[in-house]
Amino acid sequence: MKSRKFHRRDGGFTLVEMLIVVVLILVIAAITWPALHRMLLRNKIQGAAQEFSMQVQRAKIEAVKRGVPAVVRVDFASDEVYSFVDLDNSGTFNPVGGSQPGTTDFEINRRQIPTTLAFWAPADGAPEGVTAVNGLTAVPGSPGDPHQAVLEADGSVRDVGAFRLADTYGNFFEIWISPEASALVRLRKWNGTAFKEQGEGGTSWKWTY
Image 1 (tube, helix red, strand yellow):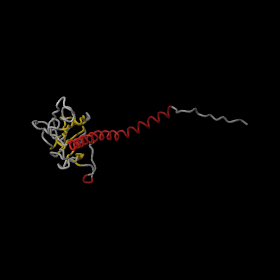
Image 2 (cartoon, one colour; image 1 turned 120 degrees about the vertical axis):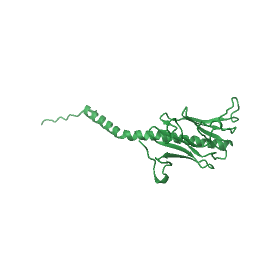
Image 3 (cartoon, rainbow, N blue to C red; image 1 turned 90 degrees about the horizontal axis):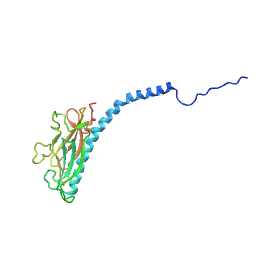
């Protein structure tokens, strides 16, 4: 009887099989990339707005803890958000060099927003930031500067209002500080007609991508 020989293929993939796998990966990537890209863009502006709101909340905590006002401002020139303890209650940042810590104005925090974002509002044209700061308190002696949030020692805000951010796709967020007595910090997004919190009125945020 003739013995049968069975040929076993060596381990590994053939070139055709490898090409099929590569094509499948490319197809899956092409299908999922737009959704992933949109998610990354949303996370960037929403994350920046959330970090901004945390800066305001931290300033409020510092004001209550130290019994003096704390201020949150934006700098259009450097695209930064910064906050400081206003020990002399002047409304401006006046640190005195060589002073002991805690005896003069000092900075709490400073953050630059991502390069793809700007301080901007739906009605703004150029230059940047015509209404990117809405309401809040005027800077003493600097009427041309954007207003600032002044958090008081009792946990209130001197004047209610909002800071606003936008991305290049036309999505707008605002960090809304209101009411005066409790200075609640809320994140709201532009829906085409007004700024709304997530779920407000039973609707979710809409995106322009």
